Amino acid sequence: MHKVVIIGSGCAGNTAAVYTARAGLQPLVVKGLEIGGQLSLTTEVENFPGFPEGINGPDLVENIRKQAERFGAVYMDGELTEADLSRRPFRLKVEGEWIETLTLIVASGAKARWLDLPSEQKLIGHGVSSCATCDGFFYRDKQIMVVGGGDSAMEEANFLTRFGRKVALVHRRDTFRASKIMLDRAKANPKIEFIMNTAVEEVCDLDQNIVTCVKLRNLVTGETWTRDVDGLFIAIGHIPNTQIFKGQLDLDPDGYLLSTGGARTNIHGVFHAGDVQDRVYRQAITAAGAGCMAAIEAERLLEHEGH
Ligand code: NAP
Image (tube, protein in one colour):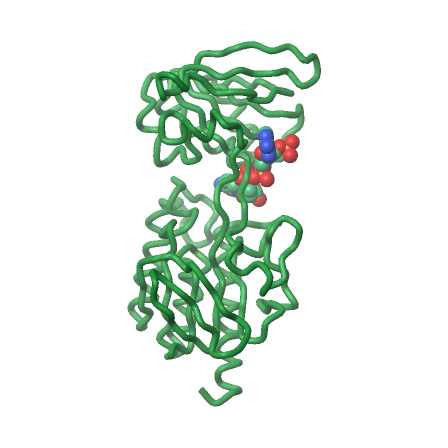
């Protein structure tokens, strides 16, 4: 029987682990499929306080894990496949084994959103990617396209200019969600070309099982055309990893966990931390802060109950 189980090993989960471990609760952290969460897929993090020169994303999340382990947190490989939150202790199935816990911190984050075109789905891993950091290296001196109009798209486009001959950024509107500094940086990069009011309609070539071109449509004029590309990076946001909890934890229409105040969910003893609940800020530092909040709430509940 565990006192605290944390689902997710990103910035939120690892910070919750630091706090609960330091409180002597020996948290068990279920790493999940994306070990280290989204930070493990980024490059330079320039806005995490305390690092005047910036820090590499994977290093940051790894450091927090080591910090948690130093105080007794235990990390477990695997993914949560079933959860019974109908009574305490809660029951969780991880890699075929049921585990029990008095409190649960859900820090399962969010995963990449896709365009959901059949051709895009078939070519994932064959020229279609959602992670510039992971796959940019393969497109040295190639033609790259990035889809999206937020900070992720700007960041990926800028990063990919290190490799690609040219990076075309395709966005469905003519205004951006991206912050001014990120947009300005992308606009100042001579290797980035902006293609506005445009949607990707199809990715080719399914016969060769490799990306060779995309079919584009101007959403204002209706004009369609084909453009040669070698790599297509989709950077259009994320979907919260909450499917397992559907019907037990309250979710908003997009699947984000609903808070009942602080880090609390609708189930007593289940807390949330990070992007799984946060559709507004979604930063490493806010995820870390949320992990701290969830840990303190779990700790206080356990103390109150005499555990
Ligand atoms: P986002 O801000 O939600 O932007 C998603 C973009 O994708 C929007 O421009 C949206 O277009 C577009 N989009 C969504 N669905 C689409 C579809 N089906 N087809 C075509 N385009 C689609 O997501 P994000 O860029 O991943 O950023 C998420 C959060 O992380 C933000 O708070 C951001 O500031 C933060 N972030 C920060 C940094 C940094 O500071 N270093 C880096 C990355 C992300 P519309 O605009 O038309 O809706």
